[in-house]
Length: 293
Image (cartoon, rainbow, N blue to C red):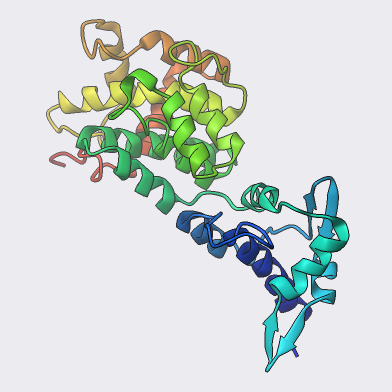
């Protein structure tokens, strides 16, 4: 006999199968992408809910388990389990369950990196994403925040820039939404374009940090490349501050955004620069800034 934990897993697995067939009576059209299933599998043992809300009603694990049958030791819980519940409650559409499940299952770094490389072939853009990711991860650890979440969002913040520069941020929103990314992640990506291509103002610590370090990493890269070592490994804050004053150096870097980012974060500019350098050192080789040291 299976344990109650296994039965609960089977119950939710049944929901996922149901989603894949787009409802009790529908055909074989897939409702979950392969990437979504990977995310569900990766977090299967963690934070799945005990109940789901459909059409204003709730459906619980216990209801599903109560109607689950076994054949030759195998749990059969697709139509045998769900159709009686669906008919009794009048649930015609289970599509909304997807959002409830996916809200509990966060995108992985592997998924983010795959999307990044699907939409960007430029080595420079990929290195920029890795640099911003590293800076965000360092900042998250320093603040006691969720490093994985901060890093994943950083990886996709410029997802659309190579192919859709005129739709920057908005095309990324469309892409991420099509992959059922959480709204919180999408909002964070949109907020880094505040005042430039979106009106989404950074509010959380994550959003404010992304807004600030996006431009800053570009200045750090440019500064490193003109140093004798061509590296961030021996770079000091004062080197970046010196180049900061030269407005003709890395002229494409919007220093006003960096200053505004530091201000809304409530940190000194030097601290923001130091944190970004420290983060980028962790991926110096991957972003081509290990240099000759």
